[in-house]
Image 1 (cartoon, one colour):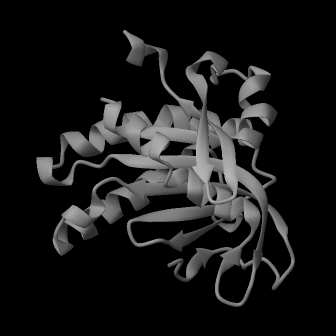
Image 2 (cartoon, rainbow, N blue to C red; image 1 turned 30 degrees about the vertical axis):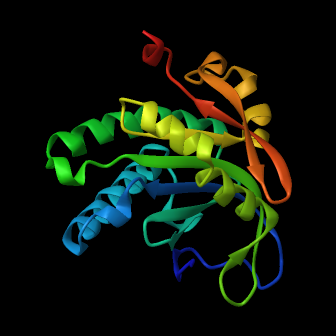
Image 3 (tube, one colour; image 1 turned 135 degrees about the vertical axis):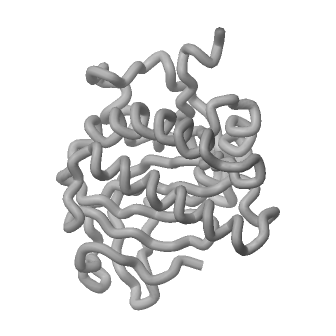
Amino acid sequence: MLQAATGTDAPAFGRPVPSTLLLADIARFNGRDDVEQGYMRRMLSNLLDRVAEAAGIEPAARRRMDQGDGFLELIDAAVPMANLLRTVLGVVPTELRTLNRLASDSVQLRPRLVLATGNVSMDGHGWTGAALNDACRLLDADAVRAALHDRTDNYVLCVSDAVYWTTVSQNHPGISTVEFHEVGVQTKNGSMRAWLHQPLSAHT
């Protein structure tokens, strides 16, 4: 269940607010004991803070919601998506190498990440909206879980179809279109299209 958020003021009750969604989930979290889980949550929190810092995102432009085995970041839509995506692609693998090099085998951090966009509102219990629901479905998708299982660089990034067409496909510097490939995600509401990032180095 989504817990209380921290950061900027929440969106007005019932009023949809255009937002960027960055979701992060720790693989095999439930297989760890309490101490290990706490340590891994701190590592993931620090990783997301490092991304925000490197992307130049002010504290007032982001909110975090605790999901137990991960976090959801609600980021002001005014933050350029290309800059955020480029930062995720550059910072996450570098930071993970550092974190995991210093960590024991039992707490190696292997997150699944989803970057999406859409309207989000408050309903009295937390954030809500179709964009949030779809982003959570991508995070839990079998295709995304399988992609992480097959990767050797400790993380996988999935972007929504909207992020792909508005940002990835536009050939921004530092974002390689050929490193994203389309996947279909089956949900109770039908099939949903998304895009998985796979560095060219992973093919060699």
